[in-house]
Image 1 (cartoon, rainbow, N blue to C red):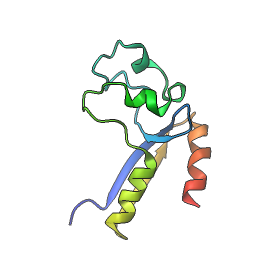
Image 2: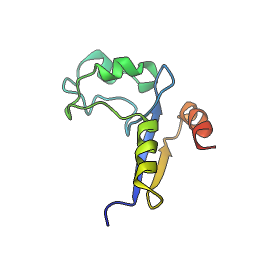
Image 3: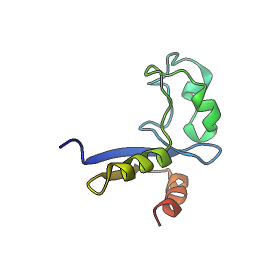
Image 4: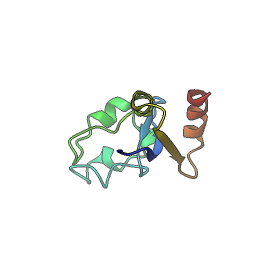
Length: 100
C-alpha cells in the first residue's frame, strides 16, 4: 500500500546543503522566471537565498536530509533512489558521507 520507491535529483547549494532539485536552476519553477536569482545555478546560491526565491508551488526545495528522515520514518519498505546529474561532482562528494 502506498509508495515504496521514490526517485529524486539532488544539487548542492553554495553553503553545501544538499537539496532536491531536478534542474540546475529554478527559472522553470519561479514565480518570476526573469528574476536574477531564478536563473542562477543552484551552486551559486545559499539555502537562505533559495528559500527567499518565490516558487510557483509556494514551498521551498526540501533538504535531502529531511527526505532521508521521512523515508526512515516510513519504515523498511521505503526505498529512495538519489540521482546526481552529470557534472555535479560536488553533490556526489557531499552525499557519500551521509550514506555511510
